[in-house]
Amino acid sequence: MGVPSAPSGGSPLWVRGPSTQQAAPVPSAPATPTARSAPAAPTAPTKRSAPTAPTKRSAPTAPSTREASSGRTAQAAPSWPIALAEQAPTRHRGHQVAWVSAHGGAGASTLARVLGGADVGRRWPDPAQGEPGRILLVARTHAAGTRAVSQVLNALRMAEHPAGVRLIAVVLVADAPGRLPRALGRRVRVLRSAAKVHRVPWIPAWRAGEDVDRPPREVRTLASLVSAPSRRVGRPL
Image (cartoon, rainbow, N blue to C red):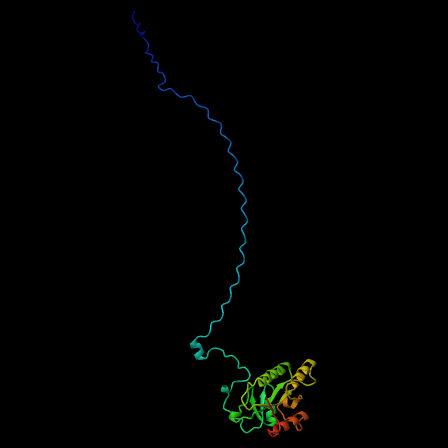
């Protein structure tokens, strides 16, 4: 049986099928809802740093040898009494008594000028150098003055003085006119229990550097002590 021929006339008809087979579209899976991020944990408050301890101030360094040799460093004030090695050559030979100041401004210079005697200042006399060994210890009646007297009396009691020094009396010069306050009066009574005490009243003329025609009785009594022979007065300590 023969194959029928294609009809003539008309253009030939070509039938093209799909060259490749397209995959059927796959439905996408529904997107899962994203989980909401958990809120961040609150940060812990930062601790305030403890205040640092104050740094210790460094101790002053000792002066170097060069500074010490140049004399640029401050020197401490000498304590009472001034050592004998630091004294100037004596000029107090020939006097019978020495006025010893328990502190600065005690009035010993005025008493030495008016009554005589050697004003040796704030130190012990040195009998080995020809200075008088009999001393009158002078101080003011204020609190600092009475404390200074106690210090010197203690040095006398401990024999912290050159050989031959003997205390005649303590001379308390008034630091102001009028009577002493009760507390200072008690201090004077304590000193009287340790040594013989002479009081010198307030003399306005002495404050001005002038002399008086007739000194008070207390000053005349001191004059007799200054001129008395050494064998009659003097308290060995």
